[in-house]
Image 1 (cartoon, rainbow, N blue to C red):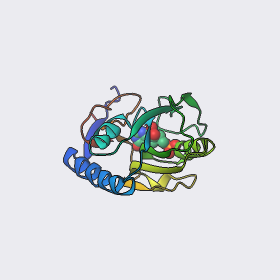
Image 2 (tube, protein in one colour; image 1 turned 180 degrees about the horizontal axis):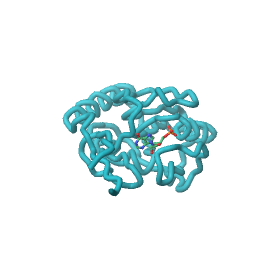
Image 3 (cartoon, rainbow, N blue to C red; image 1 turned 135 degrees about the horizontal axis):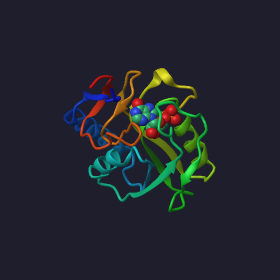
Image 4 (spheres, protein in one colour; image 1 turned 60 degrees about the vertical axis):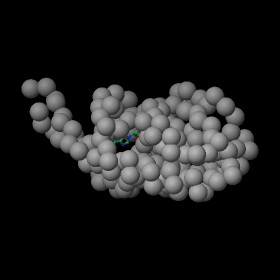
Length: 177
Ligand code: IMP
């Protein structure tokens, strides 16, 4: 029989919306009077970014960067590359990185080092989910949505081999049809 994992809801769309609202309130307060640039890591962060910025009444910029991902499996190769770079300079700007999940930390820590070299005025990280049990390199998270268990998550932008990104809830995959 084909592998047909079944998504099982871990966080409902209502819980996600409440969490995004809480994060937006924290960010709005900290960035009051500033003109931040929010940098989303593609592809997983696009849905979170879209919901978050609509709650941010700030004169902000949005950009995206695409980094090499896990490929088609669920394990990180450990090597991170920039696949599609930024469209705007970040030197002297207040940069807020928007991530969907920090797992081993390799992707985020690579990006934070990459951006730090470009001399932003400030550099912070907002992630919707954090899986600390799998961390391989330390990452400081400034704004955190959910601390999640060591399960592979899909939905609300998160994928398994490009599937399931469109699920409105964050789900775990049950290994059965
Ligand atoms: P890290 O480099 O191991 O921290 O992984 C970061 C990237 O791996 C994320 O941006 C996701 O694209 C992917 N990833 C890690 N864990 C999951 C998961 O549970 N579901 C979907 N993607 C994941």
